[in-house]
Image 1 (cartoon, rainbow, N blue to C red):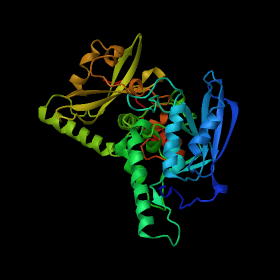
Image 2 (cartoon, helix red, strand yellow):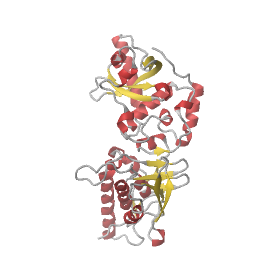
Image 3 (tube, rainbow, N blue to C red):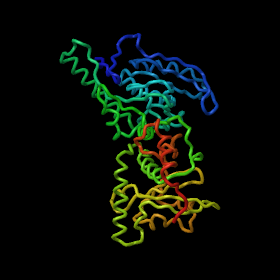
Image 4 (cartoon, one colour):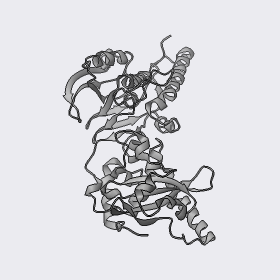
Amino acid sequence: MRLATLVLGAALAWTGAAHTADFSSRNAPDPIGTTALVITLGGAIVDGDVERFGREASKSSPDGERVVVELRSPGGSYVEGLLLAAAFRRAGAATVVRGGAECYSACALAFLGGAEPLRDVGVEGDDIPNQPPSRTLEPGGTLGFHAPYLDVPEASYSSATVGEAYRAAVDGISLLIQLADRLYVEPTELPRLLEPDRNAAFMVDTVDAVRSLWIDYADRSLQFRNLPSITPSMVRNACINRWYHRQRRSALPGYGIATRAMRDFEEGSELLDNGEVGLGFGVRTVRQGTKRSWVAFTPITMTPDGKEFLWCVFDSGLGSPRVLYRAAGTVEELFEPLGDGDFWEFSSSEGIVNPDADVGVPNGMLIVMDTVPADTPLAGVASVVASYQSEEKGLAAGR
């Protein structure tokens, strides 16, 4: 028996053939200078779209031409959207929502399947390849997730129809949970995508939404090399955001956790009388090769056993900043591997966590967006950075 259609987003019910998704393709240059097969998917997502995509993708050249899928759709079949996401990964197809385009609900689920070109097969017993994600949201594009709701035709509220719709909902949610990790979405974050009701959506319009979902927001207007300085607030934000976003988790709860960690450190330092009171946020001079630079440090949480702090060390990086993490009980213990002040030795020491090395995705490095509060709207990043620059003193070498 065919499952009742699950419809997502904008309270739309799509039933007529005239509203089915429209696929078209063309060859176009991609950002790295090669030619890509660009497939455009527009209109409602319906059963059979996976096969339609496959026919378009088969037009790519046999020498491994890049496949990019442009999405613009109000939604449609929940299950088909997820199956499209899996199909995109199997094809090594990147996804993009262009400026001015809208991609809601089932379309947003399909968007999550954007992937780097095929490099390996999936894990044993899983035919979905494991290559890193490649999904891009351009400025001016709209991306929104929605909880599934059931499209039951009017005057069809029989027990059989409702039961069929309920089973469809259960099957759909089950499929999302099953695929989440394969789509590089943290399963524990799924409630954020499913919380909105029939008349609302989880919009990908904040720093937290973009970075926790490992989406490349294609705005390169802000670069560290063009900033006059980096301020204390920027460091704290970067330290918190990067720790959680590298795990594909929302950083929003991390701000309160970091505040408590700093308070606990200060109170503990006072009790121990170890000379580290006031170093819950500090700056010190280091060497990087033959050049001098500075690093800032602050605790952001406790280790799972509650015995040490997890410290963030913000490396000013001679124009290319990054953050590192290390567990230690005190500042003295934190910088024990620093030795004679060579930061390169410290950064390669045992126990260092380097998100830039671990994430392994094209947009995985620290960017200016990471230095503002996680709930900052994408359109407001530049103004927040400008306010920090005007209101706070930039950091420089210290202890």
